[in-house]
Image 1 (tube, rainbow, N blue to C red):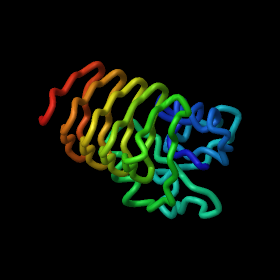
Image 2: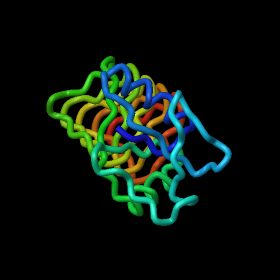
Image 3: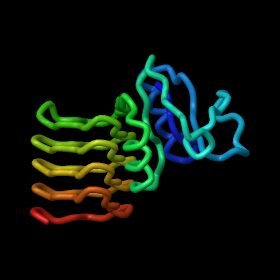
Image 4: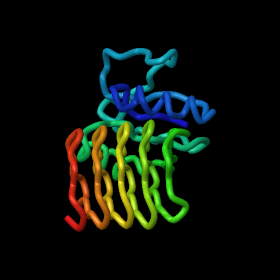
Length: 167
């Protein structure tokens, strides 16, 4: 799997992939001063190579914390998006998880929940039954979403927030 980005989200995503036994094929980043990351040579990102096309021999993840930036890169690059779901996460069989989504350590996604594309469910996030999470949202560490919560596209639910049912 290729990872676009070399910040904090990418560090955790790389660990999730490693814990899942998924090989990292390489990293892309827009910072010209970053040359290597986690033992990999960094390939130039879109701002450094306007003709960038992500490799098609493997899936990719856009691991950028800024929701609008993640959405924009996904629209521009149209990657074949993979998933990164940590083995300690508990995902209901009836939950739907969109392409390019990251689900970090200890998270829970309950029955009937729909998680959009490119979402980050950060460490310890708890999403109860029948919630809807819009594309490119970020559920920060230790957030609790009670049942029937709707999170809009690109929303950022701050760390340790609790959203009551039906909001």
